[in-house]
Length: 196
Image (cartoon, rainbow, N blue to C red; front, side):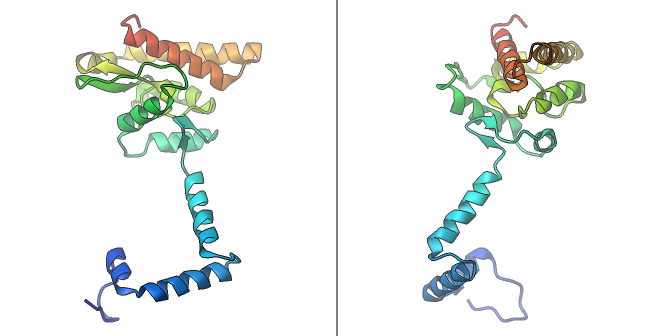
């Protein structure tokens, strides 16, 4: 189905169907040579590398150390729990974590992504280079225990512990990311065992 110049623009699929494969190959060769690439695969690999470098997480951990980038990721309208769960799974073997998740369980963010009561904790975590969906910020909980966890007392305790870990790391010169990350993992263990 050919389109005239006056009709609406092509969709990507229509464009792919309409363009002759030989013409596409010549076009790719021309563009790649104009950009200084000897073959089209070099151009493709370069573009792929640039796209991958835009990813915020690599193997479950935040790649960016920018607190602003981590904040912007936290306020995105995505399924944070799903992303956190994937990051937890990707780090399970490396960090000897038990991350089994039953059907009656939710993935819980220790530091909440959007709740205003978690603002201080988010700032501490982001300043340490730890993203909201970093594997260390999660624990799986039974659904009936998940909702009641979100109390002001809970958020105040998370704030207290992260601020203390931040202070201790600055005082004794330990790595802030490691200190905050270890505290998150400790809280995850306590939450999972019902002693938080």
